[in-house]
Length: 123
Image (cartoon, rainbow, N blue to C red; front, side, top):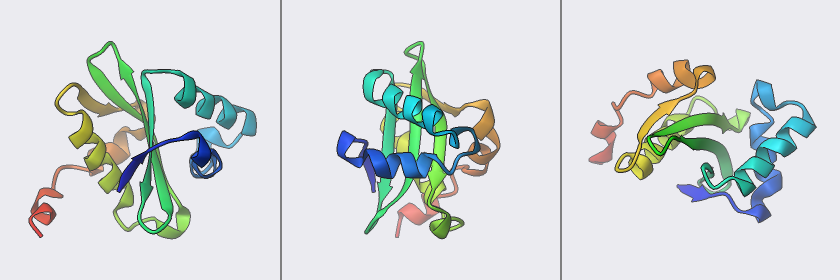
């Protein structure tokens, strides 16, 4: 289930985002979290089953696009479809107001998340 980031989940969110290559540096990671906390057009969500297993972040551009800029899954839970589930949930949340897309660094992953989840939604 997708949950909205809150300050009390900061360490978990930072841990998940640190798995992304461009977020390895602690200062950069702190700046990224700060932006999610302070910018009204930046939104961070966490994926929670029993534990928090993933993070997905996006920014709203020009009141038109919701651009996914961060996707990260705990390495122990990768290749289980969690990243794809997060993308699909974000699309459901934002599709009424915005065109959902991914920034350049995530485009390849995003294109793999084509909408073949719909057949599983009927179960």
